Image (cartoon, rainbow over all chains, first blue to last red; front, top):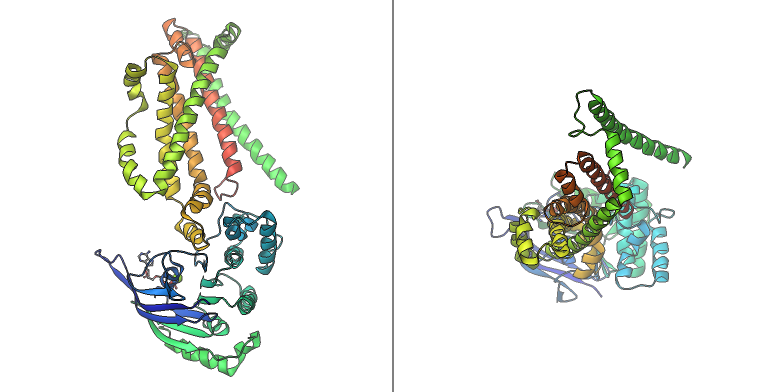
Length: 251
Length: 262
Ligand SMILES: Nc1ncnc2c1ncn2[C@@H]1O[C@H](COP(=O)(O)OP(=O)(O)OP(=O)(O)O)[C@@H](O)[C@H]1O
Ligand SMILES: [Mg+2]
């Protein structure tokens, strides 16, 4: 069980200063345990801010969030996050990056090696185990970021535009793999993207936000059957939903 | 792979050749100047005289003794100063409370040149070995601590955030993220400290020391042995250069991951 509830949350950066910035206003959301949720919205509407607060990196200035009824305060390995920026540690080889979380908790060398092998294979970076991050491309580093969070096995996956830097084929492969992992492990996923097709393809629920301050504009339940396959992207149902959501984004 | 090796070899040789060329140019101009008929060798001793001073001091054993004494002081002062700088710098850079507590103090003391402490150190501890090592330690500490603090402050936030969302404790983040991320800064601090150690060493030995390179310099001045003075200057330069190269080597090995330019 890992249900996240966002309860009447507002956030203002620099609240008591001259240039206070109201980023989020009256956000109420429920992310059911084991559900796949995606947030879309124009740049700057506060998606990353919301995700970071769910991770526990800072507290909202108003309202609260709970995980299974417990108020989220501070970070916790139960809530793993793939950051929008590159967060691969440049001083560790690719393999050491992947096994960072288990190593923190004193995993033996053998366990680490097993975890490294499994997740490096899954994110498609076999053969690069002993490379330094500076020797990898941007998209490859993003995949290290993702593999590292998967390998840490959190209950909640917070993913901030994880596939934004990938080419179309790699992106589709990573989407399919994410869905596989999610189907097996039933983690609660909160995903941020600018790609409507990606949002619809992956999610149970797509949340559309409006900007300045960020509010919930619309919540679309995606009824497409699972398991989902690539061809579904071309069906009428799919395109209809896409058209509807597209109209809701501010252009 | 082969072409890689070749390129590397070329870079190395290109670098060494250029470096040697500039040293050679200085030597040639110097010997040209000293070779002029109206040159006074008591003021500008020719290279051969400097070489003779070297041979004389080596055979008398004075040079080895002096070098040993000076290197001992440098190493002790450097070790003590940079160890303190490393510990305090990490604490100041990582823990806000300690920063607020110690930062003003260090900032106020830092601009004082280490040599200004010579009188008080002599009054308190006399003209002892301890005083000289203390002075070098102070000098190393002051220049090194700033770099360590800067290194800690420049740890990118996203790495800290990533580690903490993976369940790392504050201390684990310090050990596995902050320290490695700060190594390039810390090493720069070490190298600047080494330079400061040489500066302070010679000054301290010039004023009061029964041995050491500074002592030989002082002796050279007193008996007007310009060639000995020149020789010691060259020795100091060579020692400082060699040690800095060693440090750079270690630094390059430890920060192979870094994207810094060759
Ligand atoms: N630490 C901060 N201090 C002050 N303002 C901030 C901070 N972080 C973000 N902001 C502001 O909050 C707003 C929302 O930022 P956020 O990063 O959450 O947007 P986003 O929806 O993720 O945008 P994008 O799609 O471009 O990633 C922006 O206007 C930004 O300037
Ligand atoms: Mg963002």
